[in-house]
Length: 85
Image 1: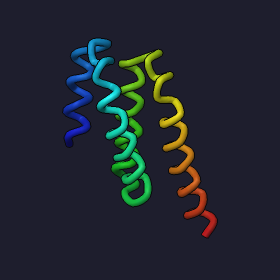
Image 2: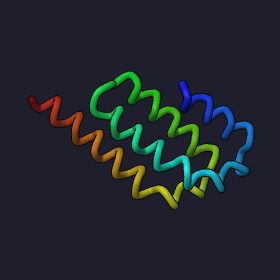
Image 3: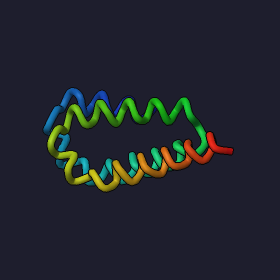
């Protein structure tokens, strides 16, 4: 999977990857939104990759917190709606 390859690169580069986050994060968040609605197994993998990314970029996550929480809220709302039905 492409996301795992990118995470491997980010792991090896550490904080050197921070300048590329502005290009990567919108794509990553878009994939999370799309996956969140239809593929639960892939959604879990994406959240695991997000955890890895946060552990790599540390405090640089603050620039993307609104997106992180927006996607998490949307996915959790969708899951709650599915459970209530």
